[in-house]
Length: 281
Image (cartoon, rainbow, N blue to C red; front, side, top):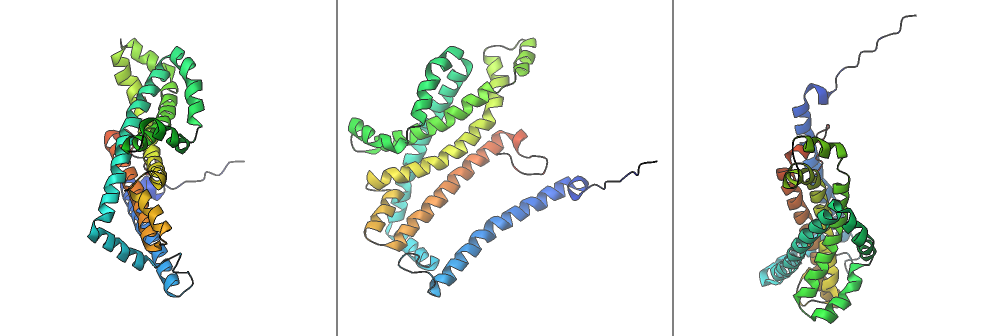
């Protein structure tokens, strides 16, 4: 018996890949805007209808008016600046030290054997639990907050980047050696390109975690900052201002993560898209 041949017609993605990717991106942007708008509209309607208790869930319009009031007095700008500086300085320290440790341990078997168990044990310690120790050593001020953010970022960057170095296929290194690459050339043409994608992924995770950590630190150790403003508003039962702080934290995390993602896409153009047009980084 002769088998029937089934003709498979090319789909839209195959017929017009650029147009398909363009329409997919447009759809993603629309969904990214419509989803929060629908959420806040429903929240507003439920608050105005009395379904939600305004003492605990004030209407978004009331929260927006509180935000305008805080902007007019300069309170919100000062809090944002204080928190952003702590996050960015700690993030920079953590990325540099974490990347250095990843390269050192990833490229040296003996160093990895000596330090990886110790660092892994420290990684499991909740970083906020170290705040009293840092306050005891360095006293009150900005340094303990910045160092705690740096420590958090360090471990997230170190462990992921070290694994990226260890995962480099040996045949890549053999191919590079066959062309005479060693030392700096091996690092530049093999190790660094293989490491970069994981570095930016770890940085995206780390920047969001850094925002979470600094808010927790500012709950107990700050006189300015978004975390301090949230806690202070709660203690005075000012729900509107508390929600302003929460929304500001969300926007700050989104903005920082978006900047890191954009930098990754600019510096790593070969990782921009998968087959379906979705961004890898």
